[in-house]
Image (tube, rainbow, N blue to C red; front, side, top):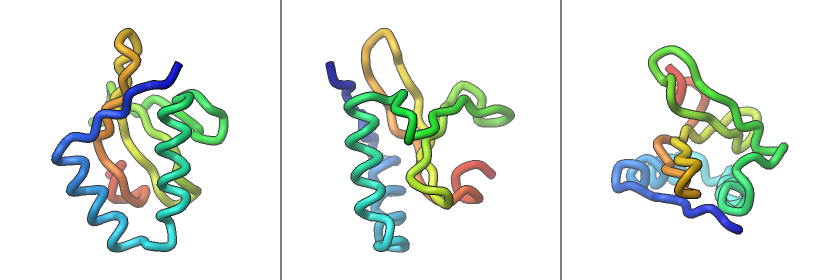
Length: 92
């Protein structure tokens, strides 16, 4: 069973900026979205709960430099994408 990725308008704007600024990461970004849809707990995503002001959200890795924050609604099999960017942009 696949998960449904929810792309909000806010996320789409952030994703468009991310892709424009980091064209070198597009293929990794797409692969990350495909893995999220297939299995959000896939080892290579390094899914982890966030703390502090982002508590309640989770993060996954695109690569060692870029992350996606997300909200997982487990009972509905949905993954709501919240933010994408570098570590500093997403977490701080």
